[in-house]
Structures are given as structure tokens and as C-alpha cells.
View 1 (cartoon, helix red, strand yellow):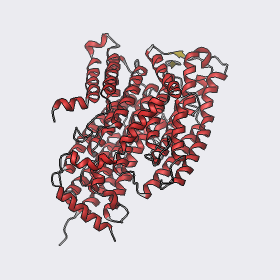
View 2 (cartoon, one colour):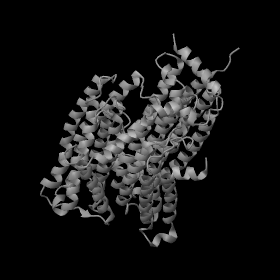
View 3 (cartoon, chains in turn orange, purple):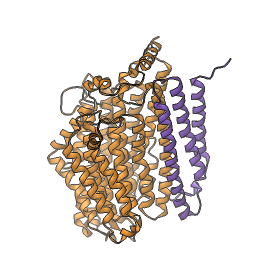
View 4 (cartoon, chains in turn blue, orange):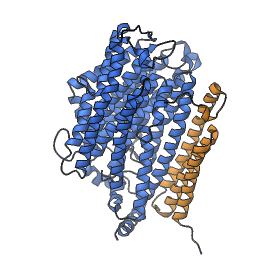
Length: 531
Length: 104
């Protein structure tokens, strides 16, 4: 295959990669005199990459590049990742010390590149490195985001827990490799690994250990219980605009990685794993919402809300791909719809905090935001949109996202093996959404109902206001015209589990070096699996 | 005579993993914690090489993955040291128990 074909297939990723390197250089000394150079280059890079991704459309040859699977999911994640990324750059325009802005913004681009690659990963190696590419820049971003020692402390906490999660992920992947006999994800089902599960063989134990540890590693990135403990501290310590990134990039990458892995298992999860995920989803929602009720610091409150939202998305992940006809039955599409909507509403809420200063720092507590509506009516209105969207109220996209998630669980067809369990989980989710309204409304009350003079001053810059608008408008527009986004999400979801493609997969790829050995091993394991 | 099999390697890796997690949980020095992380990553490497040798004879995927995990460990160490220096500049210590500003 020619180099040109490779470059065309990966054009958006390559543009982001080169853009990130360019932005890194633009932050250096000689060019420092033009402060907007680095942010402008970052914004243009992401816009161009978005345009190219949109024009090239869904890749036609999924197996063109070894180790990658380029399909509908790739296309969808490219669109939402780059669009949310462009807004992120707007919001972070004036963040960090001027000298360090080049490094800072290039880290945002690298992290987004990781999200794009996760969606295409078809190899354990690519998956591990794509997930790392998402996380490692975020450690640096937190440390660079502001020169307070709370940021330094948050970076240390996030780094060491993140490094442990990565190490567990690598350890888990080593077991999956042992079971699969290859690192290529699409060969899992071909090799008949899943059919050996349930036989009580040693390989089954390895597969279960592997999946559990991989889930633990990914759960950290998604901030799911019990790996959520870092989230409030890190969200509080980092500057608000970075926190918007933390709520989108690692979470999206984590869910997309799980989609890729479950897809490789043909959505035929071992029973233990299903129930474990069920418990994790229920606990994540409940812990996030209940503890958020006790917070007075808005950043910590939003951190717990971020944990709760992970729980909601996990419901739809457990539903899995569509089990029948019907607009709401597709859990994968619900996950994919939720990710950009959550990314924008969470980013918007944090961007608003970053748009104000009180004694040279960001306003953090509810008291500090009290009466903001009188001082800044326009910004307060966008805050209203974000909070109602997080709450799941009309007229915002947040409501549709919740409807799709809960709807997918309620309408899971009788063909679904865990129909009742999913309905119970969705009921827990709806109850949680009601609890959540209590603390979200406290933010709105503080901003609109309190009459005390607010000491908040607007922070520097128009880009951040443009960013606020770019977060709020899509949330309202998607509510009015959800068609475009839901259509894309469904199309991506249809590509996530392409049975025909999977059967044809070995023919499309290079033959494995010694196919006989794999077959022999498979035969040996499937006989060992039978009592 | 005892032959060394897959299980022996897996046990060694599991011991390394537990050792690494123990180090991470008990060390107060940030560099010490980093050593714990390296131990856990290397337990993954031992696993990968052992699986490659005993179960997955078809290719060298496991060995390549292990090489890349070593690269990953090096990259993480670089970030870790930078973050520790940053931490030292504000607190004049790398004792992580002194990181108590953020608690809720």
C-alpha cells in the first residue's frame, strides 16, 4: 500500500500531530512578542483537521493501516473530538504563563490526538499508547495551568494514581495477550477466545483477570467508583479551563476504549464482569450525586457531578448495541451521543468559572458566585444553559442525552440477556438524576436569587466569551435539531459491531505469520475448555 | 527434575506487582513511589514475555509490546521527575504526605 494512501487515511490525525509540534515551537522565545501566535495556531490546526475529517468522511477501507481500524467510530470521534477541542483552545486562550503557553496548548492537542487514536485502535499496543497519549499530557497541563501550589499538588496526586492505573492496564493487557495469542483486537473473535469462556479453563481465568484489570485501569480515566477519589482534588487544584479538558478527553477515551474491547468480545461479556460493571455503574451514580450534595465549592461539586455522569454513561454501555428495531434501543449510540454533549456542558460550566476573577484567582465557592447575574447577565445566562443541561432539563441537549441513555435501558428487548437488571439500573439512574437537581439548582439559586454584591471581575479576553457561546449554542441547537448528531451516532454505532466485516477480517489483513500455530492453540484451548 | 513453566513466571510477575503496589502505598518519597510504578510496569513485561514464550508462539507481538512498555515507563519517569521538581519548587520537599492543601 502506498504512502500516499496512508497519509490520506490518517490526514486529520497527522494534521493535529504536526500542529501540536508547531504550537510547541511557537511558544519559544523569539516568537514570544506575538502572544496570540500559539493559541491561534492551535485553533487553526483543529479547525483545519475538523474540516479535513468532515470532507474525507467515513474511511472506506477499514483495514488500510496495520494496527488501526478506521470506520464509522473513527469518523464520529474525529468530528466530536476536534470540535470540542477547538472550543477547549478558545477557553484556554489566556491560560498559563505567557512563556509556557506554547507547551500548554500543544499538550491539549496531543491529548486530543490520543482520543482520536483510541477510537481507531485495533491492537492492544495502539490501545495502550493511545490511552497514555490522552493521560500523560493532562499531568503536564495540570502542573502548568497555574502557578499555585495547589496545582503542583494536584499534578502529583493525579500523576501517581494515573501511573498506577496505566501499570494495571498494561498488566491486564498482558493477560489478554496471553489468551488471545496476538495483540490484534479483531482476531479475538476469530480465534474463538470468547467461546472458550465459561469452560473453567486456565485461559478463562486469565481472560477474566485481564478484563478486570483493564477495566480498573480504564475506570480511573473515566473517574468511576472506586477509582474516583482523585477527581475532586484534581479538579479543585487545576485551573478551571483545564478541568473542562479532564472531563472530556480521558472520559471519552475511556468509554471508546471499552467500546473497542467489548466489541472485540462480540459484546458477549462474562457474567461476573457484567455484574461488576452493573455494581460500579450504580455506585458511581449514587456516590457522585450524594457527595455532591454536601459540597460548597463549585469545582468540587462539578467534579462529583462528573463522576455521576460516568455512571449514567455506563448504563448505556451495559445495554450494548441494538438488540432490535426501535429508535432508542441502541446503547452504543446513546454512549456516543452523551460524550460530546457532556463534554460541552461540563467544559462550559468550568469555562464560566475561569471567565471571572476574585482577588486574582478563580471564584470557587457558591458564596463567591452569589449575585453574579447582576454583574454579568449574559455569562450568567450561559451558566443557566450549562446547569440545566447537566441536570437534564429541556430545552437543552443534556435532556436528550439522558433520555437516550435511560431509554436504551428501558427498551432493551426481551432478547437481551439482562433485561430486568438493566431496567433496575435505569430506575436507579432516574432517581439519581432527581437527586442531582438539588445541587445543580443551588448553583442557579446562588447566581440568580442572591442579592449580595458579587466581587467577581471579568477575566482577560474575548476568546473565552466566544468559547462560552460555542459551548452553549450547540447545546440548545442539538435540542432543537437532534437529527444530525443522532444520525451520526447511530451510523458510528452500526460500524462498532460489523458482523460481516468481522467474518471477512482475516481475508482483508495479512495472514498471521504461522496460522497453523494459532489454530492448533485454539483447538487445544477449546478442548481444554470442555469438561 | 523441576521444569520452569508458564506458571512460575506468572507467579514472579504477580509478586512484582504486589511489591510495586506495596511500595506505592507505603513510600512517602515521590521518587520511591515512582520506583513502585516501575515495578508494576515490569511485572507486565515479565507476563508478556512469558506468554510469548509459552502460549503465543505464532509471532513476536508480546516481545514487541514489552519493548514498548519499557519506552512507556521511560516516558512516564521523565514526566514524573518534572512534576516532582515542580512540586519541590513550591513546597521545598518531595514528601507526598505534605500534600494536604486539597482535601474534602
